[in-house]
Length: 129
Ligand code: FEO
Image (cartoon, rainbow, N blue to C red; front, side, top):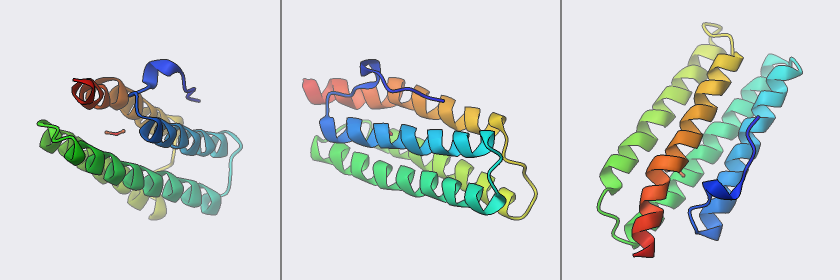
C-alpha cells in the first residue's frame, strides 16, 4: 500500500490531486491482489491504473510545456518507458505468461514514488523560480 503525504507535493494542486488518484488506483490494484480477485477483475484494475497513468502523464507534460521546462524531453522519455513496461506486464498477464504478483506491484509503487520524488520535483523547483 502507498500513502500520500505532503513530501510528495509538487506545489501544484491539480497535479497533487492526480498523483493521489494514481496512488488510489495502485492501492485498488494491490487490494485486488491481496483479496485474490478474479483475473477479470485484476485485468480491469490494471487497465484503470494504466489508463489513469496515461491521462496523468499527458496532463503533466502539458504543464511542463506551459512553463517551458527545459528537461521535458528526458521526462517524457521516462513516462514512455514506464507505460511500455506496464503495458508489457498487462499483455503478458492477459496471455497467461505472467502471474501478477506483489513483485510487479512493488515495481510500480517504487517507480511511481521515485519518479515523483526525483523527476517531478525537478519541474516543481523550476516552476517556482
Ligand atoms: Fe507525475 Fe512525471 O509523473
